[in-house]
Amino acid sequence: MSGNLYQSLKSLEGGESELRTGNDRVNDAMIRHWCEAMQDANPLYTDKDYAENSCWKRIIAPPTMVQAYCTPPLWPKIETNPDPVFLAVRTCVEAGYCSSLGVSMSYEFLHPLHPGDQVMYKIKLLSVTPEKSTRVGTGHFLAAAYSYCNDKDVPVCRQVLTVFQYCPHIQVVH
Image (cartoon, rainbow, N blue to C red; front, side):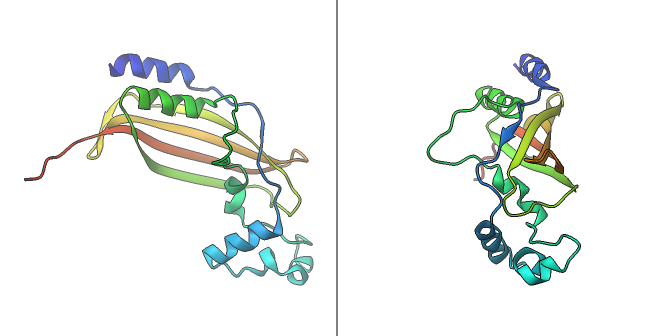
């Protein structure tokens, strides 16, 4: 079964989504809520006077918030063309590899986001491994690249995420 699955996954490798628009513009309220939740007191994020006297000349969003502006709403469901990473995960799930484990994530921050910016992004399926067996289960490692820019087409972040999409080993404990 996995040979056919692997070939299906390999056919998605290199596929990239269209440019998508994040759901919300960068805004002060989301920045404040993020900083409260993370207990991040960096004045660049919330103190207008401090930020105006910085090299950025205005409030910036915490860099790791970039993905928050692009997370699809839970309700109402918005239909979009599925990206290749979504298709790869769905293909795995349909073949019985129903568990996901985040393996690694790296970010390269290129330019800050400011209130009023609209985040745009693309998702590309970088690579798929042949089936691997690990302590947690058997499955495939999927690596994806996310490219983020603002609505002025200025690149703001590159992110690489690797997940292990697998069927867990089942252990019976007596």
